[in-house]
Image 1 (tube, helix red, strand yellow):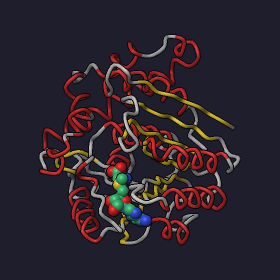
Image 2 (tube, helix red, strand yellow; image 1 turned 180 degrees about the vertical axis):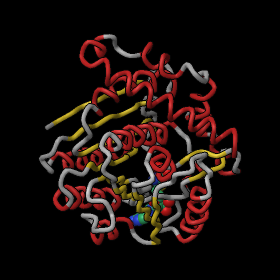
Image 3 (cartoon, protein in one colour; image 1 turned 90 degrees about the vertical axis):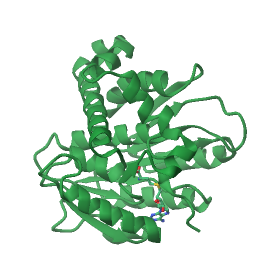
Length: 315
Ligand code: SAM
């Protein structure tokens, strides 16, 4: 059963949290010259038109990336983030806070330019590709028979310079189940670089997505040592137990686990999405301080008066 299409939701608050976290992780992996491999187990289309009828039907991007682009002036993004941050952070680690603010500014400028030049919003493969270098490699998996064709076409556009960068990394696209793909490909074998990270981001249409993510986290943590594993999940009241179980499974890896949640509203009913979370198993150095810097700003600008966030790190 594959009815989910990301075009309805591209650029919403949940995408912004996920894609900004991915930008931070990618930049952290670029601190070393050594190349990295990125596995995107549920890649979707990589590029989305926010003028598409599906995006316009939900209007979700309006209170997501479009709100940020309207509210934050070009050139003022880093300072706006630092103004919202808890000043105690500067004493804890001013350099990490400033690095986070700079990455936010780069991410927003990337989104602004892509929207201005092509009317597009970048999904997870395009975000990682933007911050990656020529020596890095992306492995993208997508199961939906129509979405995979759009993904392949968009990857060709990216290779031809759609992101406004010439030195694009290698990108491999697979039409397959991402969970099975990870089992077959982790740890990466030559010529793929041995270090890197994974994104797990299914549509959570069915309960099995939760148990598949748990199994994939367990498998990746065991088989690909020192790799970071990022997991996006929705905050929906009727899935509260499943979400708790997913977090416990990540903690059971006995690796460091970071969990960032952005609440954009109060839960009003069993079905509504009131926020989302990102878990990062074995997070890069200082990702916690970087997210602590960004989350107050995201809550202020992506949610209503009741918006808030949480950030936990457990070892
Ligand atoms: N990661 C994308 C991004 O952030 O831009 C969004 C992914 S979207 C939430 C989920 C995608 O996963 C959908 O395109 C869906 O067709 C695909 N999908 C669902 N189950 C899958 C599976 N088992 N393997 C691969 N793709 C899957």
